[in-house]
Image (cartoon, rainbow, N blue to C red):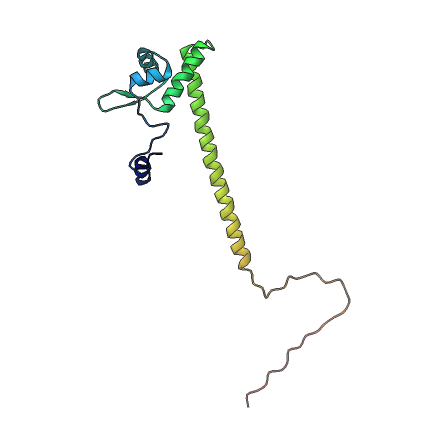
Length: 155
């Protein structure tokens, strides 16, 4: 890895991910194997929605390129029409969002369980150690009388 890039990444100034919009439409068309007009059509239909520059130019990410390839494969190899492909993409996005939500909720439940265990340990640690549990005595006919010692008068 280029040390300059590592320096920028560590400073937080630059981080390139699969979601980073870096490819202009001509490069995205070459990488996906599609004509630029096809990319524009897919954008109009909502199949692939690239980011926009302030001048309204399209910028595609690596994720967008992969999605374009998937659309092409579903259309050409599987014979699915564009409306069907759009629905598949929507459902896949919904499944991904739900999986993310399940992961968040699982983490929250796990955190609550840890907090509950810690609180339970605190409660157990607060028990008085000088108390002895009462055990039921067996039935006997013995009678015990307790008489307190008489108080001494101050002399």
